[in-house]
Length: 246
Ligand SMILES: [Zn+2]
Ligand SMILES: [Zn+2]
Image (tube, rainbow, N blue to C red; front, side, top):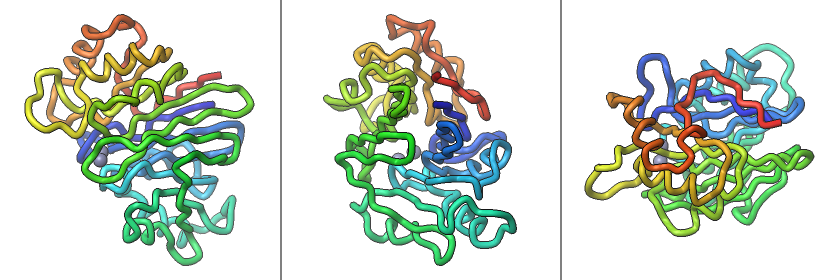
């Protein structure tokens, strides 16, 4: 299983880096996990988007879905051979209006995922609803043939059950949007909370993502490391970097 980081900011893109999106690959299967602003441009540096097998959205906030509309136009308009007649876009059904927008005639088709888990090509995907202002789902993606696990928290504040859901992952990517001293209502994890989830989960490698714009990312990293017992296994995301778990 290979994971390529296509964008890592929360909220809006900045300095050539988009918001959330990951290309998750196994053999020739290409899954796009979230499609934030700028993600389609970065995806095109790696594969022809007509080669996608599926898209999966963790929730319907714009920094995770902004490029869905232009991806639908691409499937409608771009000349070339489509891998499939229509591109399936998996989303939850707790917001019927946004779910309906995933279908675009002769281009894409929205498919409501069963939050109890689905089999999608070479992957088994499990879901856990997070704590966020809109319905959002953390994903646990297991490559069936190898047993390798990639977990993504999606957007969430801290809650009981998150660490156990992402336990023993080979790669954990977390929504780390705040410094440890952030006060008030929080809909994302702080550096300290991310470090605690990482340590409790016994995961092998952590990449902090959904990072804040206009902040010192090196401080985000150093704070996360300071709160963890495994600082050497924690990294900042690198745009376009492919992480091979096999
Ligand atoms: Zn977000
Ligand atoms: Zn969100």
